[in-house]
Image 1 (cartoon, rainbow, N blue to C red):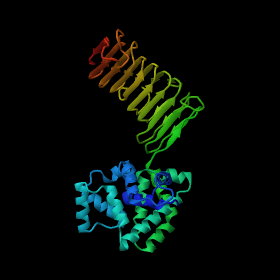
Image 2: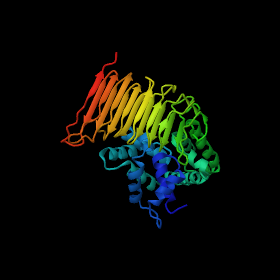
Image 3: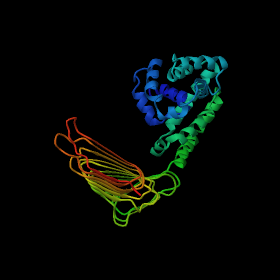
Image 4: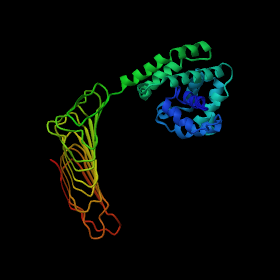
Amino acid sequence: MGMNTASVQRLYVAYFNRPADPVSMSVYESLLPADRVATQAELQALAEQYFSPSAEYTSLYAGLASTEIVNQLYQNIFGRSAEVDGLVYWASELTAGRQTVASMALQLSLSAQGTDAATVSNRIEAANSFTTSLDTAAEITGYSGNEAAASARTWLATVGSDDASKDAAIAGVDAAVTSAVEANAAAGGTTQALTTGTDTLTGGTKNDVFNADDVSGNATFTTGDELDGGDGNDTFNIVTAGNVTLPTAASITSVEAATVSSGGTVTLSTAAWTGLTSLTTTNAANAQIVTAAVTTDVTTTNNNAAVTVTGGKDVTVNSTLNTTDNIAVSSAAGAVQVTQSGGIANTNTGGTIGVTGGTTIGITQTAGNTAAVGDRRASCRERV
């Protein structure tokens, strides 16, 4: 253990009522002195900067009244509810702004006496044993997410002021680690990577992710690939330096969201993909031609290149530095918003913006500077 392992663990127990993970432990220890134990002020500064703004803090404390926050800290640190005098005092200090959660958590933890002090010490020792027991890559990556954290909290809550409870928790730490990792696995879906060959990938009942990233410069969304997301809200991500097209005989089923990031052109039809409700495409100075079912929201972003969108539900087109290329949207089932900005200066004119279909249509075209005299020509026909 490092010079400030216990100090960081003290923050985790007080704030989150769980043991730290090894990666965060290493990071936060590196921000504290290596040759001495950190002062209370140094720990508070660390907590204010990293713990209080965290998503985990928000999930645990957002919307709670001052009295509820105080009582939760008592439970985390001492394993008991706050006494009336302490509850009123600390809630008043917190409400008046004389104390923050960070300052209050540390003050409670560091000034504990009697059985409260024993509980603090025992929980930090037990938490350290948990963090140390995360000693494989699978365990370190598996101790992640709300469910794993909740499992670890349940285990740490068994530790009180008596040595017997601490010793029992430490004796069962390997089982506790396994339970936390399994809780995360049960809650989360899988993340699967496509290869340069033909892939047949299937998701489960959770939120699965399929990634088609280039491998050694070669695309991985290729001929014959079949993806079935199963249940849950599944995502298909395509990231490539090259062009994106729909491979021959590719099949995408029960995938709810797709994102495409391309260094080349995007020529893609997702109309036959079942279950797709969101499609987002992004590239640089290259054209996009996108076709989607009327149940799919479409968002495209590019610069200085043409965009054509056919179909889709709500369609959003963002085009920058576009001086000559056209934007065309047709047959959308919902609202259409086209924004063309930048690059239209002096006597240059923007490309044609044409929209047919859509329940409502919004077009915004702005010049690259205030002297620009851009010419917007938009043909808009309300869909009937």
